[in-house]
Length: 378
Image (cartoon, rainbow, N blue to C red):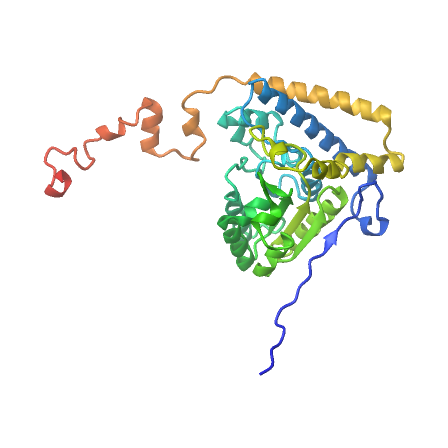
């Protein structure tokens, strides 16, 4: 019998706003208004300011290791605006600060977390955000579970978005989450921030696929690659994915092509493995630069507004630092109080006595009875 083609596919790349600030008006129709662009630009600039301050806090010994978001902010703000605040869930890694802030996370929580205080992970009531996830890829399984729960409960207007890097797609948890989400057709948006580097390993050395987006094809999942430094493209792709999800169309995979302009974390020195020319080329694609160029071209931005924004960003970040450093000292019982909705009796004993040995004094436990059985004596 002759061979026949059983499967063919293509991956589309979406760009609406280019590096020079030029907008494709046809593609931009129905996406962002100029007022929304101003808002997103302000959010990106404030997040960039926080990044710079966090870096200084770490260098001065006032905070632990910190991963900068610098260069990737458009992925966060564009997708965050497309999701429904207070209804949808954001399941993040650790380079989506602006998205978290837009969905209600107090900014100082991020600094508290990186200062080593787990209270930075205790989300305020009504804020649909999971804690930052440093383990690579594990949180995507949680996102799939949350989305599945929404489907089981028939919460028709609820969707979930989960963020991760290109390196996470080389992890087994990623594939487990993708397969689960696709098979059960849950309302989930997989958003990959492809910043080209898995710490010091370039994308082309950790995978053979030409794009990250094509990995979704194996799971029968709609997929697209977008210019991740283009807020219009990010917003449109995420908005379309969310609309598909809440209509019962299942999950979508989005690859946001971007670049981290800083080191992997403050514990890293990217100069040891990255070509300076590569970094400089991506500096020219900075989402803040192109967004400002666009706003200036339509008369919505100028130097005076920029100066006002700079001052506002400095004031906000100063207040955030004061809030983070002024938080009351933690108490030992904190480790128990945020673990369960209802704390098991055994852990209540530990919390009240601050001794694990207190559990072993229960005479009903095997080996502590007055007349233990032969098996218990072994």
